[in-house]
Image (tube, rainbow, N blue to C red; front, side, top):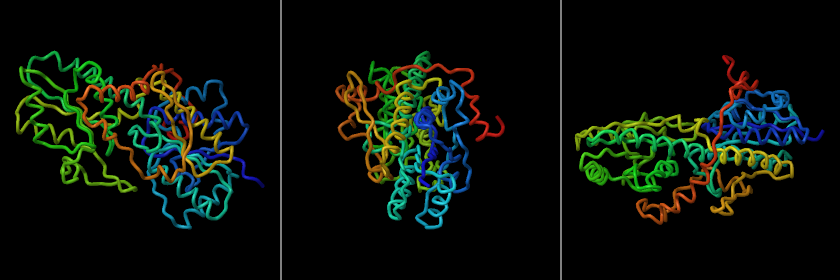
Length: 407
């Protein structure tokens, strides 16, 4: 019997937009009158048979629309690195046969694309006709070969708004002070560039912007702080969590827990506190550090409508592409124009994306050059436009009662 059903899963860190991509996949499946299953907690759900039919979970008029605007991950997540063992692949194959699966869509970031790549290559090797497609997501915006990633626009909007509000907060005092804000992004500075939007727009705060693509110098940082707080001026410094010294080590490595995930990535945090202590010791002015932490990822009250709409489209188009016979690919955005803003979805070989990082380009590293600031704004501003209004029944979808029995 021909494999005709679909299975979809989510993996990695949550975003405000990842459920919108899931909604797009669901919409296409329902329109195509095909059974679609959800694997709870990513690839682990397939290995452990934690799988549910989704068609009946979204049979009310607004269910898919509500899912589109719900943050985090309705199917749950995992950070599981597939081995290349035949045993694991045999479990996956048997599970797909059990549910008559012909199409597998995995929504996630760099590491999730590694899973897509491994499964697609193995299926090709054994000549198993199951289509495997990766749907991108990550607030870090560090996937190569795509203009941007779903989730980045909403996180960027949250961060830029928060920095604008902090600027108002610190401006009320006529004393020298430093507020250090630690921003996510792993080894890339895309989100920290978003934190710089208020400065790029009107030359206000944050006065200091530090990204991983620029080697960090403690001496230079302290010099810039001293210059900024002259005349009893309060300033904001935004810093990426993945800042590195000239020797390649993470800044404040002693403040980190030293743990790594299953993909070998160091758990990053603590750079803000490290710099707070550095300023306290060497300058002695009022100083505090703020780690925006998880709020950057799933703050739906500041999500970007552009981001959610695009995430829905790339999920919908991802399943459409799979149904048209493509496999071993990842969906991407191609920007046609920034003014007026226009993108189209496309796809590339997933092996070209898996386990790679897109850095802030070298041409943008002089963050205090007005022409570069203009280019950064032209890139980011279209991605954060449009407001979303939360509905009171938005979090009451039946699917959440499966993933979280306490709801």
